[in-house]
Amino acid sequence: MKKNTIAFVVVLLLAGITILLMRQNGNSTVPKDLRDFAVADTGSITKIFLADKAGHQVTLQKIKSGEWKVNGKWKARNDGIFNLLFVIKNLSIKSMVGVQAQTNVVKGLITGAVKIEIYKGDDLLKVYYVGGQTPDDQGTYMLLSDPKTNENSARPFVMCIEGQTRYLTPVYNTNENEWRDRTALACYPPDIKSVKLEYVAAKGASYEVIQTAFNRFKITNLQNNANYPDFDTMAVRQYLTYFAGQSFETFLNGMDKTRRDSILGSSPLYILTIKDKNDKSTEIKLFGMEPHREELDAKGKPEKFDLDRMYALINKDELVVAQFYVFGKLIPDIEYFAKNKAPVKK
Image (cartoon, rainbow, N blue to C red; front, side, top):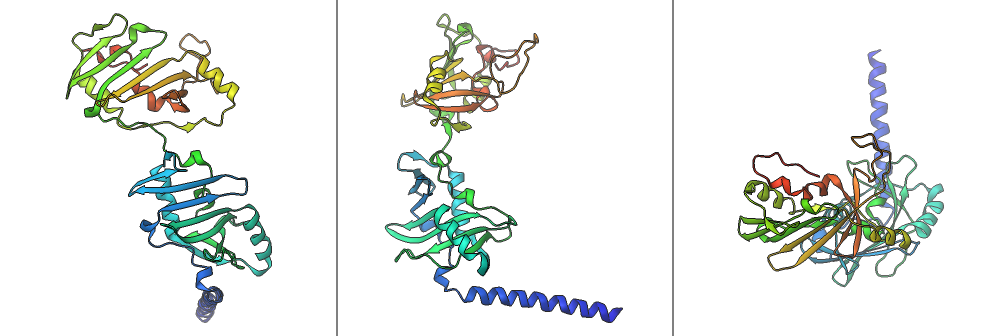
């Protein structure tokens, strides 16, 4: 029994060594420049170009350390850039594509994959194609191309991030909006001159908070333009901190024009105007969104609007989806600032 166990272990060891050698020998038959996908020094990358066969293209341009632009127009999401650079740096070969599958995989990569070009200044560092995932969901098909000759490698690879089980294709997204920064507000309290909140259907709940000096405030009731007396200064300070970093959920610039016009033609629920110390204003109009499921109010009647999300028009231009969980704290009524009264958020 003991001898059989030892023999079994030896067989397993030999099998493991054989597989390892096969992988090493297989990789060594392909020139390094046709299997070297990763870019070790991602700090030197200044531009990344992504394109698919459907005609979608995205150019990510580094402006300075920690700041990138999307298609030369919009600020890029830092988390998206970080994730892409991490993958670019840590790409690892999991295995070569089997001989019998090579033709179909290469065809799929050339006709349906995402092409990526990576630049350092004007120098093209890497070009490769990113295809779909493997049948076992453990890797992603990729194919290198020579940046100088534009000649594609004849050998596709199954790529991965070592130590991770991860499908990599979504990282190489060609949807422009997916790369755009979703920050709606980034105003820190010392930089805020005023915040005006208009309840369109309830003027008595509307107000303007004015910072007359650092940490010194006055509140105006917009119904009668009178000063709001004896307010809670701590509540005002807390309120202004909410404007330091608020993001929306998603863009709606692909929405049907008729639907967009219908939303913008309706009456907003709230109009929020933030002015900084340089008199730069940001206006956000918040509109009710049709319920995605039936909700009942306190009287048992169906809610008119969605309780989780609303439409937001930023600076009369960008229509987006905003979450009540995020934006709800920005729209309390004037009683939020009353002394000796628990804040009530609307």
